[in-house]
Amino acid sequence: MTTTRFDVRTPGRNAMIDITAQVARAVEDSRAREGTVTVYVPHTTAGVTINENADPDVVHDVLAALDKAIPWREDFYQHNEGNSAAHVKSSLVGCSPTVPIIDGRMALGTWQSIFFCEFDGPRTRQVLVTVQGTS
Ligand code: ZN
Image 1 (cartoon, rainbow, N blue to C red):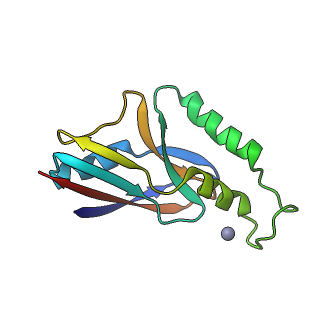
Image 2: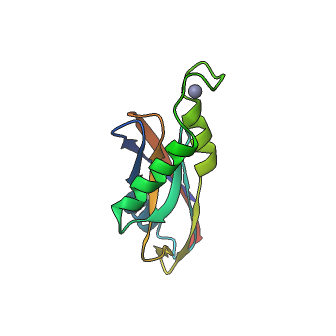
């Protein structure tokens, strides 16, 4: 098993940043041929998800729908940091997808990418990548 980490600098309060290349590099460096890779975000106001990479409108729409469902409001939540919307989005999106590794590569679909999801930026965030497998 190998674990590597890298930083992501997020540009605004809400963002989805394609981190597929960094995760693919960690899989390559591990030399695993068969196994799994888990991407983990150690934050409570961010997340990581897998979604479409072809049409940037999909990222826009995911962020817009989350914002509509879970608006940033001062008058509704109790948490005194004022960022409860980001905490709720983090729980909905989740912090840790796992992808199979087949023949040394992630078995992502043609249109799938791994996205770091920022909900309370801009910040510098961490991503951990754990590869379990056999070479
Ligand atoms: Zn908070």
